[in-house]
Amino acid sequence: MPAECFTCPARTAAVSCPQSAARAGVSLQDLASDTRCAKRRRGCSLRVPYKDGPATMKVLLLKDPKEDDDRGQDPYIRELGLYGLEATLIPVLSFEFLSLPSFSEKLSHPEGYGGLIFTSPRAVEAVKLCLEKANKTEAWETSLKEKWNSKSVYVVGNATASLVSKIGLDPEGENCGNAEKLAEYICSRKSSALPLLFPCGNLKRETLPRMLKDKGVPMESITVYQTIPHPGIQGNLNSYYSQQGIPASITFFSPSGLSYSLKHIQELSGDSIDQIKYVEALRPGIKPTPQPQPELLQ
Image (tube, rainbow, N blue to C red; front, side, top):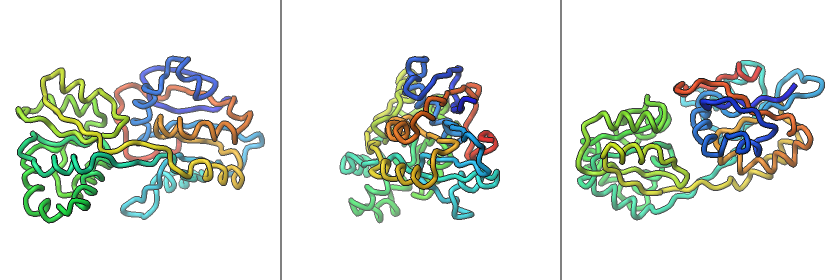
């Protein structure tokens, strides 16, 4: 039985391996859109079946661990465990922060902007780093925060909204679900003549900037972090395969995570990688949910 990979594109594609995605019309740009949605709904699951069918299905999740605020455990580990699945987390991405002095200067002058846009938790982390490194925490608490809150602070996703709230800002638009919907929301609002400040990563998609530009909404972007491979990818994967063997399911959460780890997974999986296939599983326009859905791996 061929393995399955659940993504959420607006199309159906079946390929023999992830590298064949582009040949089947599923580019990494397509996967970027798919996996942003998949990150909160199901991920991109590569199922490699055991010959004899183990009692416990092993699931490898290529993501950073994230503790649930209430239960102190990664929600994927907890939810998958409820379904009898043994999940392991291996981080494959790391981030380097860039242009913090320039970003800090911009944050110090809210009067020059119509608001802020955050589409990732790392962009919010960049704000925190700016305040710490430039010793501006007091200024932020006494005046800057209030000035920014007099403007709109747009966000994508509940995780980003939560971090924005923690630095004292009032987020809006978190329920839009993706950058395209957020752009529509921003365009529906009364816009200022001043540009929106958009701290972003080096791999940002152009959907939001393009839509705002087309509608005449001024925006100024600044790249404040870049995505790089996690330094422990190879060692952690080697350890996992030597101790656990080939997992029943490998779940990717971003195209970068796939590209950084695919070579190692192919080498470690051997001939089993040939059975992996991609299968479209979601209709377009479905909004991602914050909870994992382990029943989809059964």
